[in-house]
Image (cartoon, rainbow, N blue to C red; front, side, top):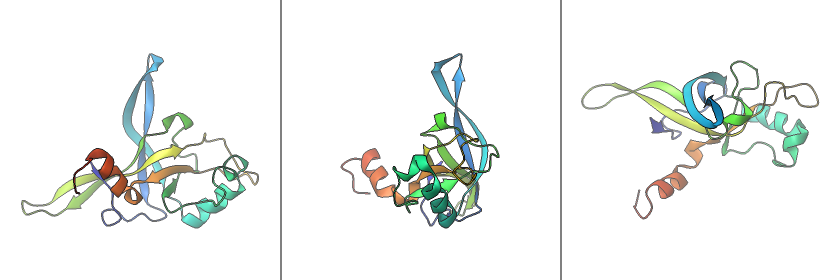
Length: 153
């Protein structure tokens, strides 16, 4: 599993990605990250911004609407993530990389869930609110400073 940079997997509207989810084991205190199986469609910046600006709950939190540091996905109630899944990855699977030893498949983390809505949450016009993910490619420098402190990367 690799962290995405824009050069690895270009993020574009219509890209199908997979969201992971938390699952309980017995009680709410015993949670595990279940096998990713929620297919989500990445939304365009324009469509995402329009939905965010219309939604009362997020207008105050994101007064400017969509930000380039976000990925917007879902919003169709097709295998959605849920509000309790914050912090889980948005993934893109089976990309082929060429290496001297030959080609091999690599999976990428595209984003980390930051604001997820239940499938029934709609804006004032009845549109479903999309899920928001922190775009990993926009935070690579910060991630590397945290993971490898003091090391020039």
